[in-house]
Image (cartoon, rainbow, N blue to C red; front, top):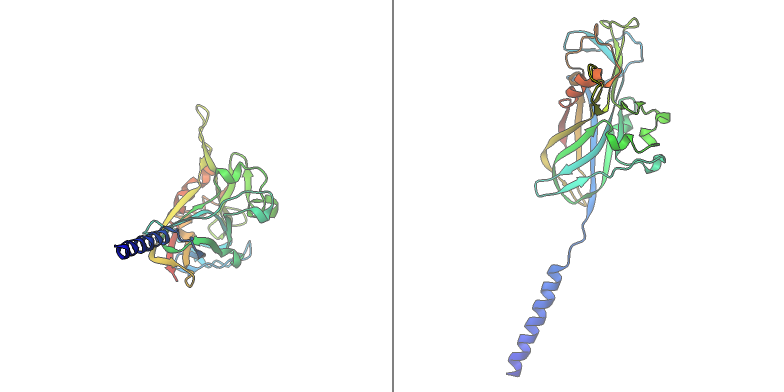
Length: 273
């Protein structure tokens, strides 16, 4: 009998220890996910010309030749999600100290290093979707003094309180431009809708856009795997059916609204490796 009791006690103890081990939560592990933006013009790789150049290397949907001297846009609020419930949200912070600003990225064709964003502290798992914002939403405007890529003194394009940041900027030249110097500038901005006074036309719009893209694969983040999503941004799709003869200076949320709608189709995942 004592032997049976002993065996039972040992079994219960072993079972208790086993359950205790199973119930111990595993420490969450984190890795890295890289997002690279590659700017194109239709089927051509983007290349910039000096402002005012008459060397036109692209053609728009109207058959008008043109070139680009500036191409830049803000990316923020990057999120990743996976088929098994994996979720990652890039940390966001606005601060006067540039070193403390987080989650805001200014992609500039003139600065190749700006095209690559490294997301750290991404939970291990598989991800098949990326979501991000093009432009600067309310929290990036109303926080007050902002440093880094949000600082006008450091090159940020900021209109005023009501209009906010220029979230997408395209500049260049075209032989068809109605401008005396054959230039054009398309500045797309605006962060809030403001109802007009009676009898007036609405001037302020929220032209910030959220983009959701399927990666096309389950990109695995682990100790040995650091996925890199290659996203192309097509300037032709942003410009749409622009006629440079009539439209060569866009500098308000109202004028930029049609182009802001085009932004929603301008991004695509090319591949993930």
